[in-house]
Image (tube, rainbow, N blue to C red; front, side, top):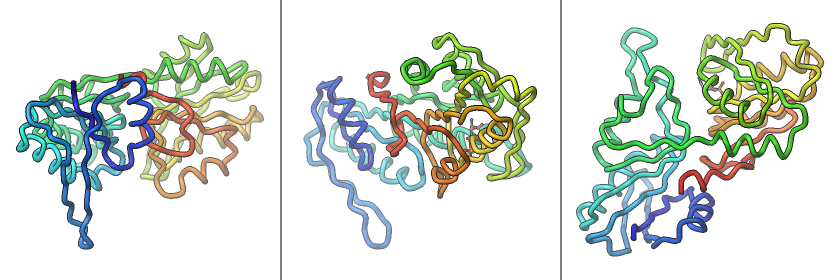
Length: 286
Ligand code: R5P
């Protein structure tokens, strides 16, 4: 049997996961010194055991060093393999050099994870210019999809939905969810001018008045993508749009700003613990 270590901050998802996968829970302590350095202590014997670390990777810089120390310590203590379950995998959006001299952090981060772990499991990573995880990960990297869980939520909670994706990348998620729900869908054209300046064109917007607009995206970070769509739709007189994100990154005051923009409801999967979590994906990790 494997030993599961739940990294601090992942307790809620860890508890749901453990209900479906009874396994040995490893005890560890992460001590952060006043100067910000980390000390990992593994209290459970791991010699000869397969170990799994559950650690979602939003705010990855705060976690990466501790994760590296933990993986290496488990190995030194005799673990036969160290796997990482990262329900949200950060650093996937910088998948090319958009401007001269920029680092392609998705590739560098993939090298880092591939160096310290034997296997990765994640949910809906932002695969756009990289089509497959194997293009950048040299370890087996298994991807689960939240689409059927999102579809179930829409079927139970929304009448007359129309699914709307903000950009071409979202087509993969929106199409799959729409097919399962049996609802129409459409994908917009987005232009990002800066971290917080996003413009989206919504042609023939009046046609959505007959429906409940359900906006679906993989990541809600600054919230500007969702806010831009919500504001256009509300101005056109549609019902208050429902915003669904797989990953509740919510930088700064993004959640409050999205609520204030007129979104009818904001719903996310629990890949990152957040008050908007309504869709449990622990079964997919199982
Ligand atoms: C990017 O292409 C992603 O799919 C999301 O649309 C994006 O990360 C959302 O970011 P924000 O909430 O900052 O607009």
